Image 1 (cartoon, rainbow, N blue to C red):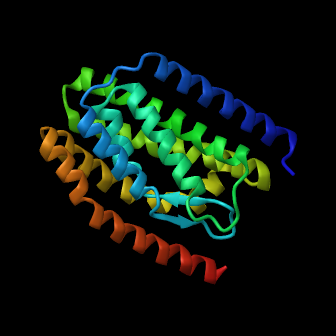
Image 2: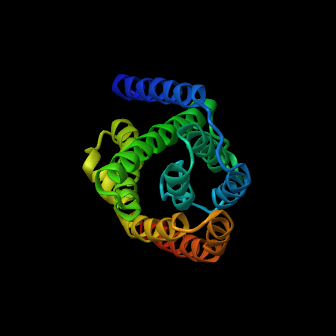
Length: 225
């Protein structure tokens, strides 16, 4: 069972995520629907490329590239909706132990908070520096810190470990993927609608290779433990 601090942390995250979803959807402004539909389908597909974290009832997905692109290219409502759909697929797709509704809601809330933060940082950076690359790099950094930090927080509270210890142990290894992912997102965002979706589709083999690599890496970690 979770202790009082973990329950409070969980509740605050759920409330914040729920409020951000409502806020973003209340200002729904669809942009390029065909491009958005392709991005949504690819995001849901890559959300099934997930690896199990050793000794934990959780998974890690490689859908970051598409979520970063959505935060940079679409409206906040579109980006948050896409992120929530991705988190739901990641939580429920082919799980041996079916997650509870609270676990799924927490994953969705974390992704809503992460993408919202990423969206605004990207907007502010682009306005300040006039560079999509700078915006995407800073957005990727915020995405990495917020997303892994939120999950590491609940893990630390439930295991009575220091949050930095948990974060370094379970998430620091994924940082190179975020750097490469920001590069892919930048190339895609510099293209027009048709090329934009083709670049995202062309990145799928690379993402699958990354998925295979991390699955092997974490599999070895599980054996070593």
